[in-house]
Length: 281
Image (tube, rainbow, N blue to C red; front, side):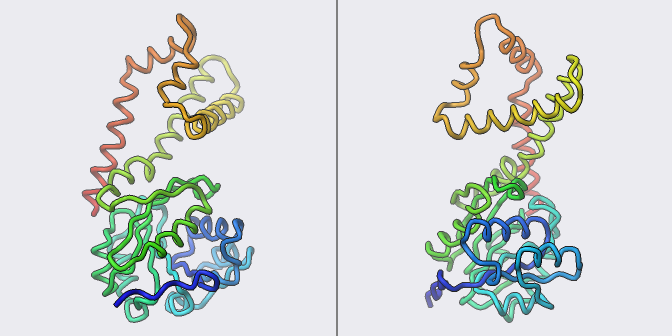
């Protein structure tokens, strides 16, 4: 039996888990005008988290069961601290508890790293699931997210979820077999960049800059370079060459990075994180 289409003009969105990631997505959805806040609901025992959602009009319901019953699309975060730190057993318990309410009429979305569609489908009893790997910059509207469709999820379902997550950044579609690598790159990648920003700022301090100025310059430089990489249409190698004059300061710095194995270290970090994601799943 084919899944019934989600009514795009009237559907309601529910979050199982009311943490920072859920708040970021909900705020993005409301800010972009995709849904009004009165069509979004969640549940949480912490009054502070409830106040955060109520502050922009989201409904707070007594129980997760109520959220599922009221919603056409359910995003399960299972109270995750982040997309890369989760409890497999906790998510399983949540889905099994809600299973009687998780009919094929509802579209289910999971952002738990390492939890495969097959597991979700076994626990829920059907395959109208979409798996999404966002990352923490969703909090400022510049996430890099990837989605994969479960067996009974339709292209229309995928487009709907792409619209929701597109409200907090950019989103791509990919086969689930790539998700461990995606976790290693974009899921864990913000931490690598934070480390790079910190190191650049430390270098600025070592060269004589005040700490606040060094950190501001390092952060803005990374932001600007990323914007150039995404908007210029040029390969990063070409952009690097554009800044690098013969015998100049930039090539001297790049030479030191190459001597230290900078490229290989970043590549190894992605591969190690992807390997860990496979181990967790």
